[in-house]
Each structure stands twice: as structure tokens, then as C-alpha cells.
Length: 202
Image 1 (cartoon, helix red, strand yellow):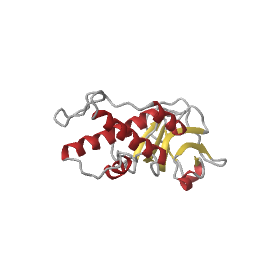
Image 2 (cartoon, one colour):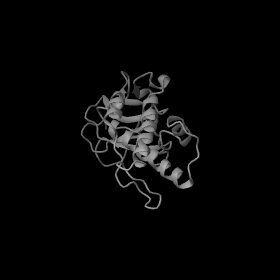
Image 3 (cartoon, rainbow, N blue to C red):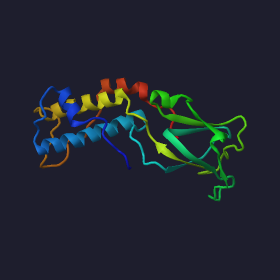
Image 4 (cartoon, rainbow, N blue to C red):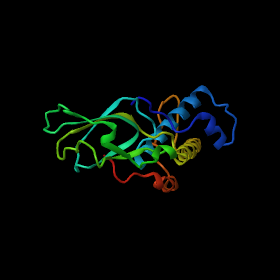
């Protein structure tokens, strides 16, 4: 998964727990891994990811409508091709004027495109029911990590770090190399992320 990143940094974490960045190398390694683990929990809960794939990443879809196609979060789309008969030969290469990306103004507010729609004068339609009938090339993810995803990542990492240092909490050990209890999002964190949760994912 090229481009995968944590939604917070060690510097930002130090500010959240109000301490100087004086961790040992082992503590820093544990915290770095925990930031990444919590970021993936945020992805899983919201059913989307905020890191960006490499440019030119190809994804395939099976259309259920000839005129509308729900897609995973996308920053840019550079090519759309369709296969009408299921032979995996993509006979039609769409021009940019053949489809619209929605929401129309997503890029202006640092949000992703989530849907494609055939334009009124487009030359093609999506082949419905054809497995992998639509081939889409682009950069997938979000233009910027949303503030709420970053804030929850930092706060949850700080909470789990504190829990790991308490006798009754989760134990983290550089010698073991893993957390003995798998990190989980707090219910309050999940409530804060609800506004980002995607209902439809393709």
C-alpha cells in the first residue's frame, strides 16, 4: 500500500500529552507503531482511508447502473475504460467529457470524489453486470487528512500509551515488540468519527 501513513506525528503527540519529546528510542518505536495502528483503526471504523495511493493506481468495478458508478474516495481520476462483453479487453477509453466526478466541488474543500456520472452528452454508458467491466486509473484517498481523523488518532494514541503504562492497563514492551492487548477505539472516539463514516463503499 504505497503512500500509507499515520495520521499524526510524534511531535503532535508530544503536544497532546504535554511533555517534551524525550522518549527513548524503544519508546519512540512503540509510539510510531501505535500511531500507525490507530490510524488503521480509524480507516476500518470509517470504511475509508485518508492516505493517498500512488498516482496511476488501477481499480476495477462492476457497474450496477449504466449512468452512475460509486467509487472509493479519489483525489484524481486520469483514465476510465470499459469492457462491454466481459473478455477483459477494455474496448472503450472515455474522454474527460464523457463523465463527471461528484461531488462537483470536492477538490475545493479538500474532500474526495466518491461517484462518477455519465455526462448528458457522453459517448458511453457503464456496462451493467459485467464483472470488472469498468477500469479506473487515478490517485485514491483524500486530498488532505481531515482534522477529525488526525485528532482522534492523536488522542487515542495518547490514551493507549497512558493505559500501557498503568498496572491495570494494556502493556507495551519494546522487548516483546508488540502490544499485549490489541488497540481498540474508545466509544467516544467512534462517536467523533461518525461524521466521516462512509455508508456506501465500492
